[in-house]
Amino acid sequence: MNFDVADLCDDNTDKKIQVLSSDYKNYGGRKKSFGKIVTIKLDKSNWRLLELLRDEDGEGRIVVVENAKFFYGVVGDKLMAFAEKNNWAGIILNGYVRDTAYTRNIDVALYAFGTCPLRNFEKTSSSRAVQLSFGGVTFNDGDYVYLDEDGIIVSTEELL
Image (cartoon, rainbow, N blue to C red; front, side, top):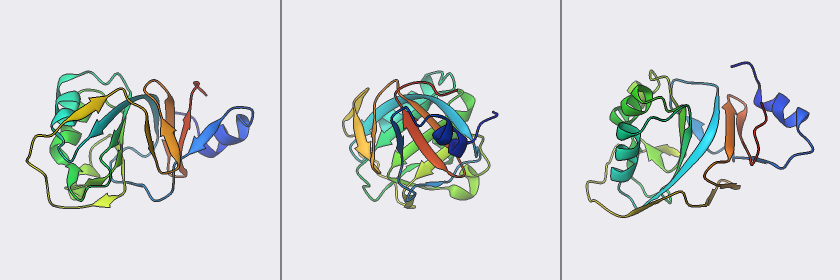
């Protein structure tokens, strides 16, 4: 991957680029990535996200997850292993992660608000392919996301 997020911003001033708040940190092993967005909205439970990462070929896409910052670890080493096995480039989560000693060694980007060792076991509802808004950014299914150690940007059109 030969791009830098800062350069993409400089080279595309004519396009509407959104920048995710720097409150989100990378807990995954991949430091640079880009791809089409798949959105999913959870209600505490990660069951639908687990099914997505385990059962679908990610084809280099990035899943953006809204979990309203419920204080549960939504993604850990098991979901990250599924993501890596099934070609997901990254996960951006408005929530918390766990097992970070292991997730940092898995070749998938994992951006989240923080960590929490507690997991929710209750099965709750979820929605897919919905518009999500957090961290100062609106995410739509099919938009493009680019990330590196300088930050995360979102565009409605491909920049590379």
